[in-house]
Image 1 (spheres, rainbow, N blue to C red):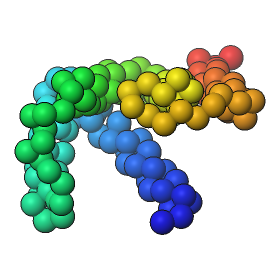
Image 2 (cartoon, rainbow, N blue to C red):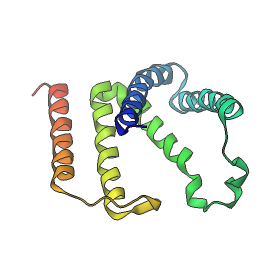
Image 3 (tube, rainbow, N blue to C red):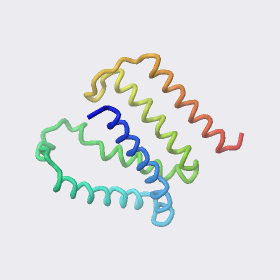
Image 4 (cartoon, rainbow, N blue to C red):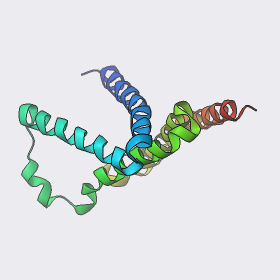
Length: 149
């Protein structure tokens, strides 16, 4: 599969996360922050169960033999979802999303650069540094428009 297809796939995933943020935030106002997060993960879990049953070809039983640090993905997902539920109503969806994207890009580049968490190493070059700087500039301008400066 072309890398462009994978890029399109993650752009669609990003769009889904951006739509998820206001949905979870509005729900959080009605039912509570943690309750909204729980509902988000519960419905996601139900969908994943169906996907595993229909399309799953992996070895789920191997979960007991992997290094324990590989099992915290869901916990980190809770941090991401709860942070958006709490911050999005205060910052606006655009600023909350660009802020979370800046955090993802920055940490992602560090993970690539140093090969952390089992990732293949991708050397830091000026293109990646410029990309991070432009993301930070984007955060600044979206923030600046939010506060009316």
